Length: 159
Ligand code: 4NP
Image (cartoon, rainbow, N blue to C red; front, side, top):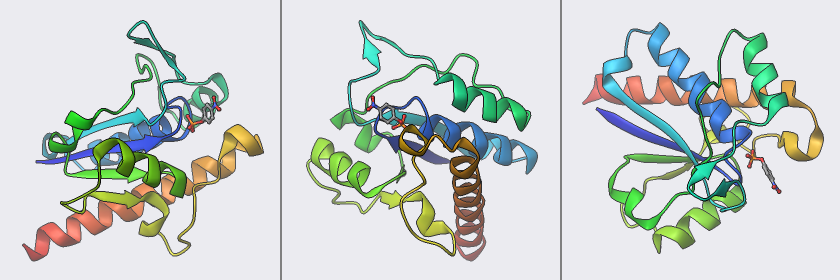
């Protein structure tokens, strides 16, 4: 079982897209039983009274265009106790990495990663909150998820 938490600032655009895209890829590969997949925010911005915000409508629309539903996903914020609950924390950008390290008081088991490091163009995921370009964000996230799944399967085969 591999437990993966995707992380961004608000958990309403990039990390829910990654969660939903990666879950679909895993399902299509017949591997659903092997994974626990979730996403979370570093900020409390979109979490009120314990009920998080829904996925941002433009992110929902781009997912829907690719046949994917964001129904039911609500924003949540990471907490220190999550560190033991997941094997990998996959961040969308460098500030997410810094904030995640701060919340966990470090990363002594080396679990924090950047999504685009699993592609041939390591960088921050293009942030649609600022660019308005949800297609570009989708492409980055899709490629990152594809690389992440390949890397995990390669590691499993070598184990
Ligand atoms: P996300 O996008 O981190 O991809 O969910 C953002 C959502 C909200 C804000 C920034 C980015 N915000 O500043 O409220």
